[in-house]
Length: 131
Image (cartoon, rainbow, N blue to C red; front, side):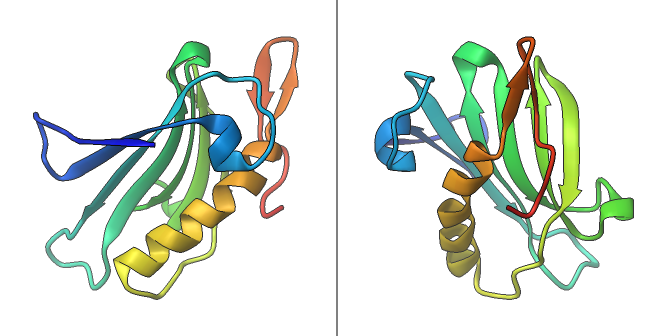
């Protein structure tokens, strides 16, 4: 794993990861990264965050997002994007904990979430969540 803070927006953390090591299993992608951002909007009594697994070679992003973007899913959701387009979203549990504990829990959920991605005719989907 390699960590590099964002130079443009220092409120992001970006870490290059070895997918096989991080997921504890062999994996098709040779490279991946984690992109992590927490922020505290005015007028909201909890933090917002986006914790994303990104595979640049496949233009794939899988992320846990706690924000106001999709109120129909509640305050937190998991989202799968491919070719910069959302392809699936599901409600995710709200973790009422310190941001470092939330980060730890979400990182532990990524192996199961990544494993739940299904590919058909070159297109990914996340047919079920939670797994």
